[in-house]
Amino acid sequence: LIWSVFIILLTLNVAGWTTPAHAKSINFASNTPTLSGTLPLMVAQDFGFFGAEGLDVKIVLIRGGPTAMAALVGGGVDYTLVAGVAAVRAIAQNAPMQIISGLQPYMDYTLLGAKNIRSVNDLKGKVVGVTGPGGIAEFAAVEGLAKKGLVRDRDYKILYGVGNSPSRAQALESGKIQASPFSFLERLELEKKGFPTLFDIGSAIPGFPFVVIVTSKQKIENDPEEIVGVLRAIQHGLDFLKRNREKVADGIIKKNKFGDPSTVRQVINQFAEVYSISLHKSDIEALIGATRIEADAKKLGGTEKFYTLQFLTKATGQR
Image 1: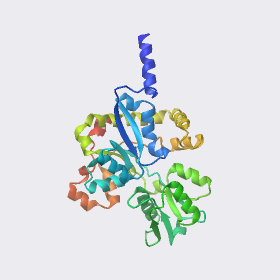
Image 2: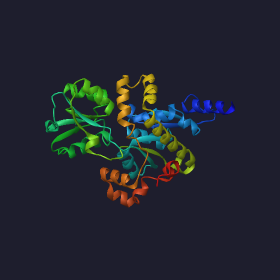
Image 3: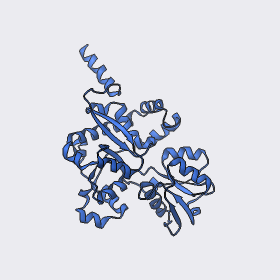
């Protein structure tokens, strides 16, 4: 009987129905409201994996990588998901933070065109809109188009400040811009409205550390065990997601925040096998190369300036 009660309590905790009263509060920033951008954290939170590590995690939406990293440095958040390119650029500028793991080694962007644009070649002489300078949307658009043979400022122009996804879709509709990068979930919605997909940027730039997890140097020095717990919880959540897609989908659908049930399932099936907190030196080298700061990185002491694997090794046994 005692054993049966123990199993029931353990099941309730893993289901995310209880949180330890003594759990340590943590703010974890995400700079995108999309399902694909927050799903790993939501699974670890909703199904009790953070709780099992004694952590009470609050997911905070802070739009824009630079803003999220500023909140990290200022102590407003403890961790942040951020584009790998943005993280490397900030660290090269002496931001007191380090990358502690990967998360999404696939660039979740598709370039969509205005309704009169049918191919990449139709963008010659046209305008591609992005949210702001130095962001991942700009990098994705410019590097993706370069893979397709189009060079910025020679073949097309970049327009900053177009706004969030609905604003960029409106800009496409009005003719202010002729193309813009959108996430997988946004792509599904915009395709229904007749906006054509020009190409999948993730396929054009494969095996790229698109999203990483970053924390502050202060956190690294003062709370190493917490970091290990955070990464271990996320890893357990990703393992759970792979094995229980429908259960996760049911939980997400009940939140009623991420579109209709079929869309939620499409996103989960698209990304369940993609997420990985694994990170290697070659990933950091790829980010440094993409950011074109090889000389600066060398002056700063090489790749070790940008990341540390000590916590990931403890959390997963990765070597």
